[in-house]
Image (tube, rainbow over all chains, first blue to last red; front, side, top):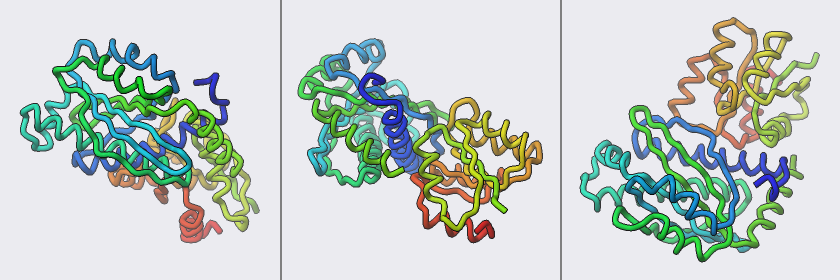
Length: 203
Length: 121
């Protein structure tokens, strides 16, 4: 990402994302009724074609789920947010939250969590750049039966770029890791740079 | 006399946001630190009246700084400015002696209320 953004732009984007993630963590903590240890999310902008390979290794030996949600805002801001989960820790969280532990209830829980994470995070981001977003309903792209890399490939194919946001939540008694991917169109980079420069000029 | 103030945040943007949120009537000499270790080095070597402290930082986080301030009896007011806005976190920093807990991005009006409340302006 260093080649795309200047150091100041990168710092600005990271801070916007940290603030948005703080809001999402607070919402998640209330939903899970526990304290969420917030880590600074690592962000990286990559070509969407690289995405399936990057996640293949991480999710190949584990059951995984993908939940997708489209977003649309002013000034051509649009994209698709994908949250990836490893299912082995989802079982415990489902039990903790009182969802039934069958696979349908687990997917319902992951859809709920995705929606909380995605919409709170993106609303927090949009607020800071004076934008407003609307969302499509979250949908499960793949569950344990399907190959993660294939499902990612089919979705990422529609977009040129992906802003990877590695989220690692540590609940008090449980670890809960997920990855968030924001798939965005190619022209978004110059838009993002423009927005970051506008914010940097204010300070 | 100007109050020596330390703004501690790993983000340059966040440090600028805090600096810009301070009212003009606030007579301050401003120093900055990019993490908790840098902040403590400054706090141990010179008089600082007020610290604006971020929580999530590399090297040493804001909680670590608050613990050291308490343990070493360093004499300064601390206002925490945090992206982590969970009530549990607010409780924790208050217990560690922070005057106030402000959510990011910092709201200048709210900051003025706090500064007035503690007679800093």
